[in-house]
Image (cartoon, rainbow, N blue to C red):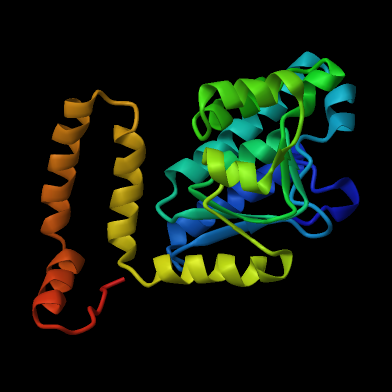
Length: 239
């Protein structure tokens, strides 16, 4: 995200550009992992409040629907998406972090949903936030508007790893390279299945997962991976 002068605010234009890019990456399958980060001093301050203030209700609905489409693109694309977070990630910026499959943060990063402080409860960020951290912690962030530290974000499940600022880029790349070294088709199957089963009843989920892994086991990459393991060699993925 390259709007450092606007604190990488998620304007409707930026969200549309990001969605188009994600959809192209998903279709072309030329990369195996996506990293989202912000240029400048912070990750993202959320929606552009000037845009929110100056929009009529219909325009506002279009803005939030555009954000919905971006979040859905992240969820539905076959590649894992990693948020690389520095500075602050607030409101819809925090929502973006929570919507990504994984997140790496610098240890001075801060996360928040401060809408309540300006009379605008962070209802949309609450969706993915509440699916990352516990209910009580999510409500605390939403009701107080106070920042969560990177260490607390790690403790409560909002991010996967916290590193010193100077190591953020490398740590994120290392995580991405590890995942990119595996079968892209297996990762795509797994990502889709993970989100399908997450809200199912336990044995409904297990039944669904059994069907998924049965089909997965018959793919070219699965056959190659098992064969390579048995023959004690590195697999050669088809993708």
